[in-house]
Image (cartoon, rainbow, N blue to C red; front, side, top):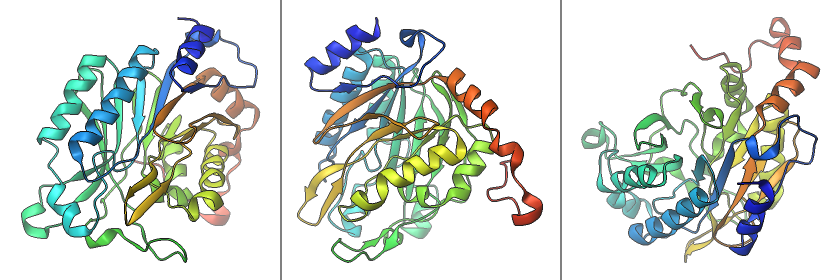
Length: 312
């Protein structure tokens, strides 16, 4: 399917497909296509799955090899007690439905923040915010548990106390080879810590993903700036699927899901409301940029240490 045909099909369905503006050496339709999904999760898990599944199926019809869902794609609860009650283990019913969906559609899924009852659930009665990566056969190929928990009080925005219900993950996950490139897993608040993105880049990441549920105050001020900064400093593509709109009477999210290229250009962006955007991943362009601007060769750990140690 040519880029122009994919663009027309996407626009007919109310989505946006934006080509990268800088010149590429490869024909655009030969490059892997990724889909970034934007949703408005509620406490209704089955309705949330229905919405996400429709977007994933649309992404598959448009030729995407990998679809990204935002943090809390499974649900956004009203309080910590409801969060714990609605949570599931990785081998529960909901992830089983996504496993079947990946197989049905024949594409990889980045499930950007699953409320996971871990093996220590009985002892702790707390969960993990778990980024799950499924391949096109529905197998779990990687899991990353959010290491930086969002405990903040921003004037004008509902206070966040993620640690009331969630435990921090113990480690980073090495980048995973996918049909679109090597993907480094992170979640939302992690984007404020460049050490994490540098560690993933030094471990071979070509795509950094920040599935998120940014607030209405921090979103306009920091969302795009942080994502573009992470792309520029690591010379990676950055994919950020986001929650959008009012989830319930206590919480709303900023949206503006996007893809940023290694130069820092926003190459795809969702409009308001649930939907998706599409972008091509050009790894030849990434490699050329790293060759022309070899910042990782110019680092001076003798002066400031290794900010983001390479993963073992």
